[in-house]
Length: 130
Image (cartoon, rainbow, N blue to C red; front, side, top):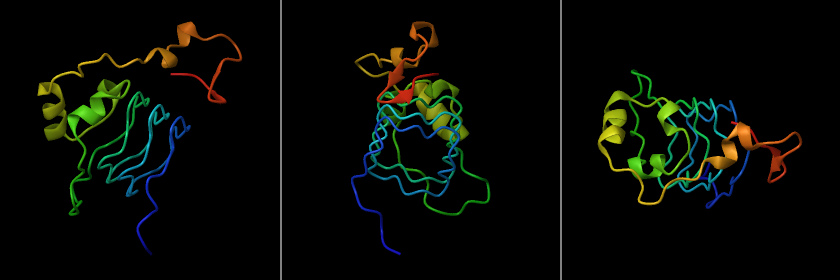
């Protein structure tokens, strides 16, 4: 089993509630993807592009018995996403997030605002919801 081909483009993909635990997502483009309530425990995100992805309820925690390499993503990567405040992180990384500066440019999460949607609205051919 070799390493996955890179870069992989999952921009705009609906990955809601998907189990990506242990996944190698090192350089994957997840920009504007729906990762709502996704299981990303033990996932390797490295340089993954999370810009404007919906992270509401996503689980990035590491099980206590995990002895592997820790996740290597940055607060800047996470803060470039939408609803990162509603995702789950390990306490140390959460503290780092809380202390890190917000992005210089405000993240546009308006596509995930249900108040702006009308019946039948889609985003890149997928249902657009928060």
